[in-house]
Length: 269
Image 1 (cartoon, rainbow, N blue to C red):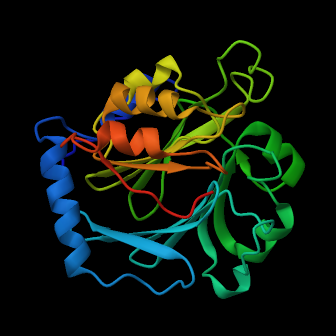
Image 2 (spheres, rainbow, N blue to C red):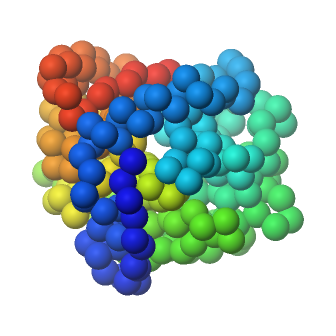
């Protein structure tokens, strides 16, 4: 894992992103350590959903559960983070733990469902989103790219840019409206890109251990754009997500002999 000294500067995204990790150790070392943790830690049982587990250098267990499409849940030793929870895919949220932290990237119906949010929110839950969801919900705190916050148990979250930049596709997710999230847990940095293409701001990402990149043109990326994005910042583990009926074979084939980036395919259609 990376040894981290965190210094944050609000609204200065490149500085914020570099603050999540020190570059003294390689992605290979990070991946080896995380792979080892899978055999040491028994994942929570959130059947029928699959969960991958990791362990930080400080011994915290990080379990990522793959719900569907753009929906994820992260369990950090019992601290629950829900990302873009919606009921449209048939998820019964009454059977999942409630949110200590709820993160919503933007207001589209496959990412934001206020009725679902009400089910998983607790009285003391933290709730962050882009500005439009904050207006619609009346409950979340608006956050924009470059802004950051840290929870009481030292989980740092940085909002990142998320937008379309292909000609004719800008209308789907205009620049400056939506966000992605970088979740930093000790030495593990998890990037949830949100609905975006392979935008130039991704070159500012540093020491990303786990990345979720959307693959679903015209709304997000083509497989080639996903490859381009991953090559920009080289995550140790890449999870294509939000992919619908997209054929992910080109991504798997491209990285199959690359020791730096491991591609893992989950049920995130």
